[in-house]
Amino acid sequence: MSALAWAWACNMPSATLELPPERPSAPPPKKTEPKAAVADAGPITNARLPVPGGVGALGSRAEDIDGIMALCERFEDDCERHWFDSEAPQEFVEVAAFEIDRLEVTNAEYEGCVVAGACTARALGACKGYGEDLERGPGGGPVPVEGWDMATPERVRDFTGPSQPAVCVTPDEAEDYCRFAGGRLPDRAQWEVAAHGRTNRIWPWGNEEPTCAHATFASARGGMGCGAWATRSVGTTQGYPSPHGALDMAGNAAEWVRPHDEPPGASGEFEIRGGHWATEPVYLRCAERGHFATDFRGIYVGFRCAYPPDGAKSGR
Image 1 (cartoon, rainbow, N blue to C red):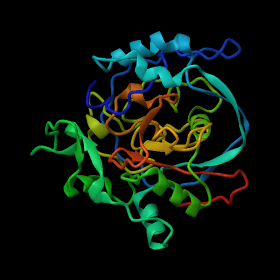
Image 2: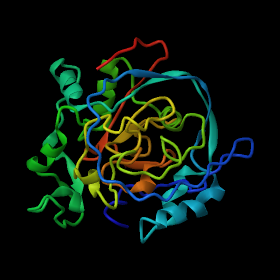
Image 3: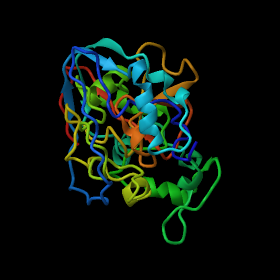
């Protein structure tokens, strides 16, 4: 498994993903070349986006796994079928109306919660990374490193700009922030419905294969973080929202989510969704599921919050 695939040993829907017959099938994604990183589109404020209640499709059908493998093998040279087991079978669940953050929670917002006494200061010195993600060479590119290790203070600073997503945060710390904001972490069903709506789109913006205009990820041309070698400011890709208007649900920071049908952390792991700045396109899909230990903090994972449907609208 490549360094990019490390903890993402879960699953990915096919390039010809279909929902059951009563819904139209998705066309194959266009095989577009990754574009160079785009400049930030300017500041954008957060909002609580309404998501209506109804039945949502979660995961992928078992018969889609062959196509999922084919999509994986376009980007990885050692794909394994068991990575995708947790996506199947596809299930349909009733999801009550809720609201969700348009943007991932930023460093500035998290630090505001710390100042207010409602959040714990992050242990940035314990923030982890994997392999070449941990260091930059003299020209700003990667330095080969093997395995997991703590990120240096200099490397962590690449992720601590006020408008970048708050990474190096555990699920419990993320949940504390969401309670402070009047909500909680979204569960699996809420997150996935917010990402693809009630459509069969492969990525949050649709079925067009990702470029650096769509998401911040490890593009072939732009490199990790679309050339930034880190996260970018939240909302940078504001031209490509999910059906409900959420941004960065693919790439930038992966996001902690609660399980839909069991206590959080019951398996000793916590689910992450959406891919991140160092993953390849196959890991950005709406149905992709990854996991980290419940005490994990790393340069990859942040969060956004979900709220009751009658929650007060807010901006930031």
